[in-house]
Length: 201
Image 1 (cartoon, rainbow, N blue to C red):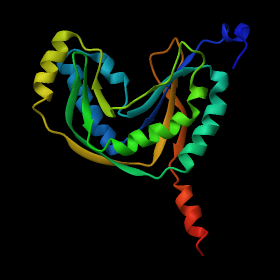
Image 2: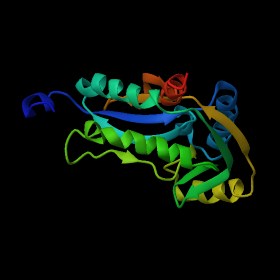
Image 3: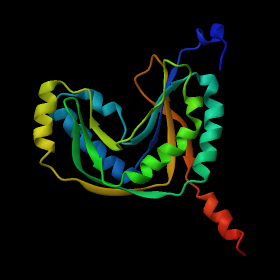
Image 4: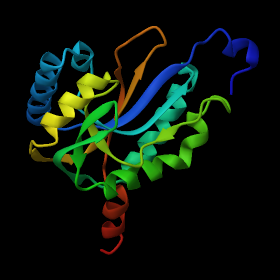
């Protein structure tokens, strides 16, 4: 924890830990998001990349190296898993998203990150937010007419896809930025299983 004098000189960064689909599926979902943005006059949609958020938090950049080290340790013992996406859902009256048909392994990965949640909290006013209903955003912060018309359309549409989550990604943005940038990637290496199997021989 930084002394209070130093904290005042260091604005908080915003961080998210996510899993992301491979490039071909990213392109498909980006096209869908851009179509929504064009139809419902929502250019901000174009700034966000397809991902499923595990946790959202704020922290001082001076803590980033320690967080990265701990996330590497967590990722190393996690196994890759398949994520199935299915159709669309919404958070009335502001958000439309692609549904996740296989939430359990995503929630379990988020629970593993909870073991370092004290590192993700700069003070009592900024607690990390762990996602309990995994989803992939299409559009958020919608005006009432955008939500109502958009949901009327997307609630009748079907969408099916799947991808292998073989890494988690730490993204960050400064207080004065609108865009998240890459901070680090962590491969899901399943090292527990490898080490256990090796010990049998």
